[in-house]
Image (cartoon, rainbow, N blue to C red; front, side, top):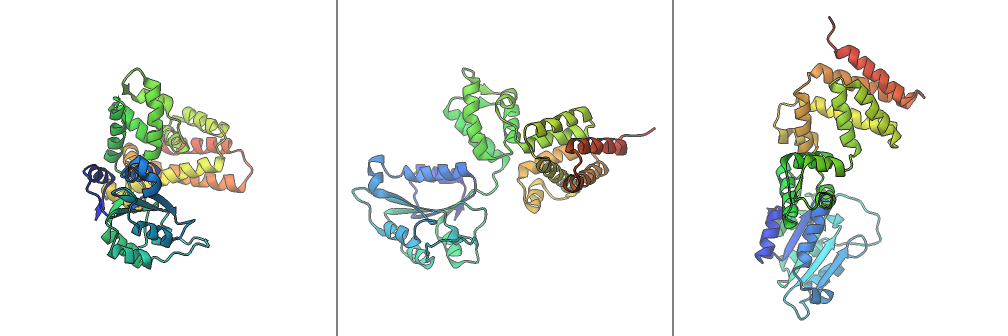
Length: 343
C-alpha cells in the first residue's frame, strides 16, 4: 500500500504501526523526518538495545535481517532501519558486500511482529522488474515522496512555522518557492533564517524572503530571461555582468539560459495540463507553472528567436576566444532588432 508522508505521520501518531515500511524518495528533509518518526517509536533509554541502523554500502542485508528477527530487550518494540537499499534499483555499485535479496523475500512471509523494519530507498525510481522490489512494494507500507505539489510544499512550510507561532503571507510563500526552486530541503533551512530575521514580528513577507534567501543561478537566470523578453536590455546586461563577476562560469550561465528557453518553447507548444506537461518533460510542476505564466505574454516567434540566438552564442563561446559579455551584448542587439516593431 502506497501512502504519503502526512498519512505516515498520522498513522504513527495513532500507533497504527506496520511491520515493514519502504520509504522512497530523494528529498533529504523528508527522508530525515521519516527516519526520525521511526526512531521515536523506541523510548530513548531503550534505543541502545532496541534500535539499529544498517547501511547497505557497508553491511550485508543478512546481518540487518538477523537483527530484525530478534525480539526486543526489555521493551515492546525493536526498530531496524536499512539505509541505501540500492539492491531494489538497477544501480550498479562496486562493493565487496554481497546481498541476497531473496532473504528479504523470506522475511516478508513471516515478519517479526515486535520489530518495525524500515527500508530506506533514497532513489527516484525502483526496478519493478526485480522480484524483491515488486514483492516489497506489495507487502510493505510503501511511503513514496515523488514530486511534491505546490500545495504539499505550502503545507510543510505552514506546519513548521505554526510550531513557532509564525506565519507567512501569500507573496512570501510564492517568493520562497520560487527562490528555492521548489526544493523542500532548501525551503526548510531558509525558514530557520527567516524566523530569526523577522523576530519579534510574527509574519514573513515577500520582502523578507527577498532580503534573506540567497538567489541561486536558476533564479537569476529566470530574472535575466524576463529582462530579455521584456526588452529591458540595460538590466539584462548588468545582471549578466554581475553573474560573471560573482564567479559563475560563462558556459554554465549559457547552459541554464538555453535550457530555460527550451522549456519555455516546450510549454508554449504543449496542449496538456500543467501536471501532464511536467510529467512529459520530466521537470517539477512548479517550473511548468512559472513557464506558463511567462509564455502567456510572448508569442512563439519571440521565444524561438531568443532560443536560436542563445544556441548560436553557446557555440561561439565553445569555439572562439571572444569575450562572453560581448557575445551576450551582440545577442541582445540581434534579438532587439528581430522582435521590436518597425515602422
